[in-house]
Image (cartoon, rainbow, N blue to C red; front, side, top):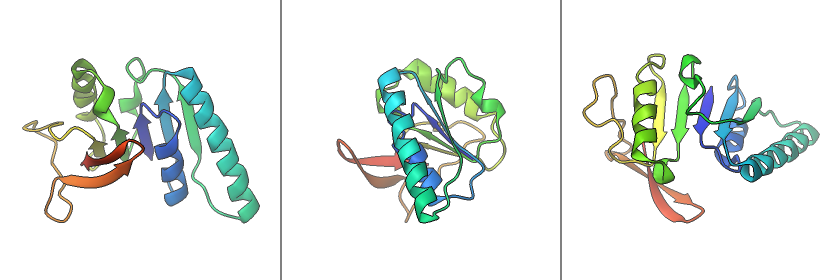
Length: 146
């Protein structure tokens, strides 16, 4: 299962559904209605194109709902993506407390190089010997941390 906290236009959710069609569900929480509507349109178009091409696609669940008031941490997520650049420190602290209750082996991906540092129960994952995984975002080069 894949969860995107602050899913915006749904790119990460849809990409996960396309790349890993065997996932039980790819879910996104978004509170900005125009972004959510764009995500729903993109998801519907993707599902239609996949069906026409016989391409598998994991189920997509896009929610117009705040993850801060939802009990998302009670679900057995495998991967949680947090594009944390625009989140307040209090929001990240809340997310951190909740991820500590996730099932063993769950992976948390953020854009915060210090997320969870020194917190028992969280382990940094290194890619090619580095904590930063270089990625290209819509705004330019950035990094993801697992």
